Image (tube, rainbow, N blue to C red; front, side, top):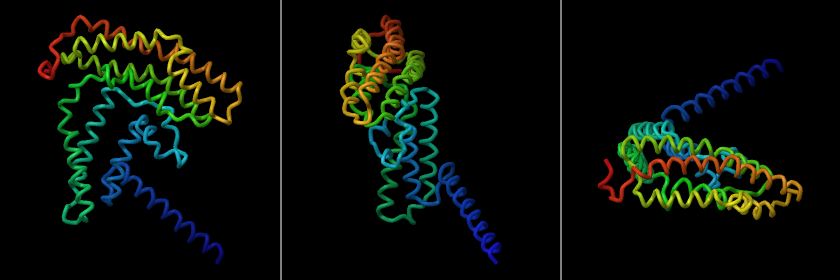
Length: 277
């Protein structure tokens, strides 16, 4: 009798595991059965595809999900294309849910999401018509600001994540350079004044001793408030941060500087959208 019960329990557990596996497969790779789950899927895909945004919102740390805090956004053209493809897929799947079966609140959410996705899909043909490196909100000046003001520093693990992000910057900037060179091939270059401004900004940034750089000074100030760290541990982290700045961050910026110096003679002063192809 006892063995029979165990067999039944085993069979039930196996069925539950299979059902859960089918549910997850459908949720992740196909159109979810539930419209509300579809909304959440689209939202989650965007978040987990952009670790910097996920860190900024701070939504998942309370559930023990923190690995994204050691990563930077993918700036590669390949990632950009995957994102464009995902918008198209999401829009197609959204329109497969019959509107006449949706509640008033679902219809509103569907209309808003449809509008957003349609805008992303239509924007694909203009995806190169911007300047990722600029004097106002460029990748090059957003990174120090993000690390100093957004990257959380509450524990030893957060300090390790900080170092991982510094270490990941060369890859991010290499991906950014790929993007910039595609724009150059399409004759999409920033105006001369923008190039001059970002060159000065980046040159000043790497001209500061590593120990005085905002990436080091802000880390030192915030790490001093982490109770679990001893003075020796703080000093060790500070040394590693400064080494990463001089050995990883500054060379990455130097690559960008070299590229912008190279394109400076090709830039013009006819600023405005009319110069775009």
